[in-house]
Length: 118
Image 1 (cartoon, rainbow, N blue to C red):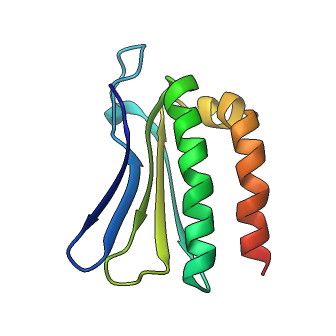
Image 2: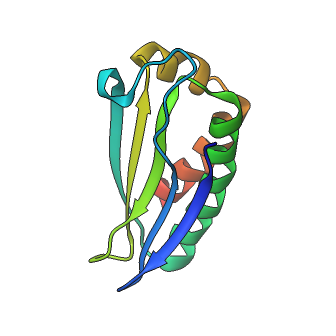
């Protein structure tokens, strides 16, 4: 079973992720389409706000998007205001279609955009 995890270790390394899993079609992450993004925040409050919102969309992805192979937000251990987002989908169309049109994505995206605009 896939679980949402919050892991703290050493020098404040925090990871919020869904563990990689095999999709219901049997495809593994090796044949997937990947999106990786670095997010740098101005302050810890902004970072924490996005991580809280991320937990909600991660839960949605776990429950309703079997075509998503990995969905994680990783906090850098060298820069506490840097988050690296990794998403892997069975196909790019899975990302562009059902993921981006989901209610969870459409609730999360404006929160991230608001942070980017400030």
